[in-house]
Amino acid sequence: MTTTAAGAGPALPPLPDVARTRLENSRAGRPCFTSDLSVNEFVLVTQAGFEPLGMVMGTSVYHVGTQQGNWRTSQELGYLSQAMYNVRELAMGRMEAEAAQLGADGVLGVVLRPMNYGFFSDVIEYIAFGTAVRATDSAQSYRTPDGRPFTTTLSGQDFWTLWQHGWLPRRLVLGSCVYHVAHQTLRQTISQAGQNAELPQFTQALYDARELAMARMQYEGQQIGADGVVGTTVNDHRYWGEHAVEFFALGTAVNRVRPDANPVQPSLTMPLTG
Image (cartoon, rainbow, N blue to C red; front, side, top):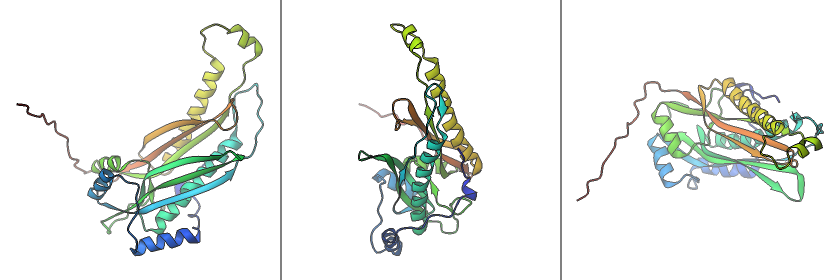
């Protein structure tokens, strides 16, 4: 599977007219801002020097093709891996475009969620949404080096903690791997009947699939010059029957932008009881 570095990626996609109108009205200040931040998150984000501008969203409905694999061999289904990567990137790109339309520096609390439709077994939708924020210090931009708003799944509390220690989110990075797990032979099944025994072909296949997903996520972080990736999750999804599984790694690439930051140190407080 191939990936594209953020700095060399395509331009942000155009927005539908209805989305552009909503965002232009929000930027003009006519309606109040919208946000999925909790009260605590909202307060901490503003304390960090950022203000919410509005909720932003991106979506992509994608037809997933077919790929044949040898049922006797555990192997990646690269065609399907690329499809799952593409649909997520399209959704995230449209969310970033909405944030850019609002003049945001970044998007916090991003949720990237699949939607399946029972009447279309080969169609999947991914939706990405979060709260666009802008730094109140207008003298400096906190966008990524290629001019895109930063994106992160981190909550308002986690963003505040990261910022207090001099770090800034850069971009959500991801890795995907759809893997076919080989069937056992009849002889293997019979020989293991009634026994406690590891299934090495399954163990190795799932291990390989997770490692491929993790390696691709790490590679994306390296390509955009990140110092590290935080908040990583690795999830599995089964879309193509009992012997095909996707492993999906997602995290936030970060850079240390204020090495001289002096974070608040927590102190222990003991209550006095009479």
